[in-house]
Amino acid sequence: MILGGTAEASALARRVAALGLAATFSYAGRVAHPDPQPVNTRIGGFGGADGLASFLTAQNITHIIDATHPFAANMSRNAIAASAATSVPLITLTRAAWKATADDHWIHAPDIKSAARTLDPKPKRIFLAIGRTEVEAFQIAPQHHYLLRFVDTPEHAPDLPQHDIVVARGPFDLTADRDLLERHSIELVVSKNSGGTGARAKIDAARALNIPVLMIDRPQLPARQETHSIDEVIAWIAHSGTDRGV
Ligand code: 3Y8
Ligand code: NAP
Image 1 (spheres, rainbow, N blue to C red):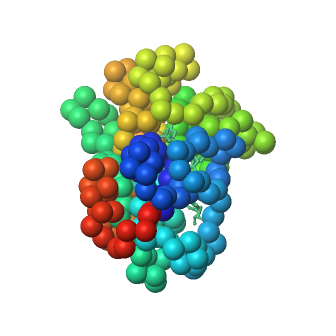
Image 2 (cartoon, helix red, strand yellow):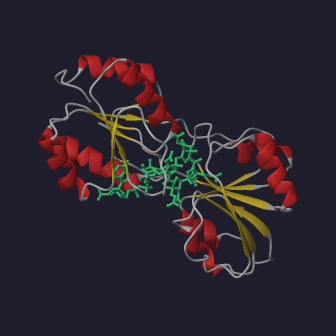
């Protein structure tokens, strides 16, 4: 089974489908129209680690690949617990964290709440590119004008007195993100350290425009087998567990 929701998970699903492996791809069901996958797909939570363990047993899953996002910490913790409870082997397909270069101007925050607390009191125009779920953490700093980017149009406007919303699904591109930052006269970009290529356009655009980035570091996770390589995942599937599919 592939726990998905990232570009790497989709690339892995394409490889697994091409190899003709029996696979189930899993989405949380966070957005209205998740990208279709070339393998059997399920949408929705499992009901915690126990729910996931029961699913693994009921569906005879022989391998779990956690290819979720580095900030999907609950899902990753549940996968580790369910793998231990059922002895179904687990590997995590992650992407390296982004690293600042000499031309970047990054300020680090350990998590989203701390990021909101470190904002300058002086009103600024801020690109809050962390999605929809954690935007309310910034209600403690209503003096800023926020540019928000969501995958879906929200049912209710976020409770931030000054904000604009852009509805767009990544992967994003440098020219378009640079144009977005300029058009909205952005003075600060707030970003998760997601890694990968799909979300990094805003970081490269900020560097080009000499705009500082408030970079939110990844949550700490328990030790698990990790790889950045899809080839390694395919080799791992071939050499671990039984070979009844993923
Ligand atoms: C539902 C499923 C693919 C996957 C594409 C990647 C890249 C484009 C960039 C910005 C940052 C953000 C957000 C982002 C990106 C990829 C990847 C990635 C960031 C989809 C998708 C699902 C989600 C969930 C969604 C979150 C949100 C986060 C938007 C599909 C499109 C901000 C993360 O409205 C909501 O509830 C949205 C929730 C979790 C973070 C948040 O808290 O709001 N992703 N994104 C997955 C599920 O249901 O299981 O349709 O593809 C996937 C992708 N989004 O196949 O190519 O690989 O990460 N996703 C961040 O990085 O900060 C946007 O705007 O610059
Ligand atoms: P999360 O906070 O770690 O997980 C919350 C709960 O959502 C989990 O406990 C689980 O519910 C369910 N869930 C999460 N991922 C799932 C999956 N792939 N399949 C089935 N259930 C899943 O997760 P999140 O941060 O909300 O991320 C949700 C999805 O969006 C993931 O697929 C992730 O890869 C994708 N995504 C997240 C981000 C981000 O910034 N967080 C960015 C890009 C993509 P139960 O406990 O009921 O099983």
